[in-house]
Length: 161
Length: 114
Image (cartoon, rainbow over all chains, first blue to last red; front, top):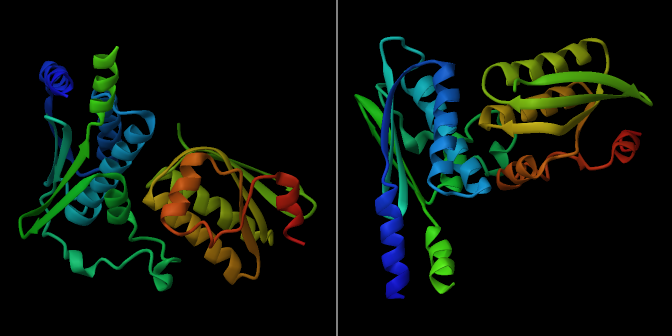
């Protein structure tokens, strides 16, 4: 077990990553955020399904930031940060809107809401990521998304060979 | 790749072959306009072929729901054909898989309208 842990640690130390972007409140930002997330998730060693989940979660969070947070205001920016910490990919998306009330988001799986045409973004984000923290405030909403790197099983394979 | 649609008629059913991304912005708008256009021409039996759809976001899911309810409200029906695994999984987790009538065979899909 000790050898596996040591190998993991070395792998992640070698590929430590931190990147941040300041983006306009436009639809292009939503596409950019998705593509960037997809690239970084691939570089971090996630598999195809996980890359899709991460890029979709980031896309939905960017949609919230651009539409519901900043409301397309050209004077307001979206901040997107990626950080690789130990066994996690941590992604933070921050807008400069007025903050939204989480309690007001209805459950999209409730029978009376199934045929609604919106309101599934946060639900999808929670479905796709391992941890989701949402911090609304009057000066903007910050959403933090965490996906665990499941590289430890790959490391174990290598170590046993 | 942006969203593209083309339509064809089989036994009174309009099959809409969709390809690309049904996402916020252009993709969702194209789907909405296509369905609206068909309804205005009285074509109310619509089979949406999603076999070549590579990506759908929450806006795209909303657009599918909107198309479904709009067609139903006008006395027609809308069914889905050829879901990719990604789209299938998305409809599963959002509990919409049971709302839509989903087919994986075109002939069976067309017959299901009768």
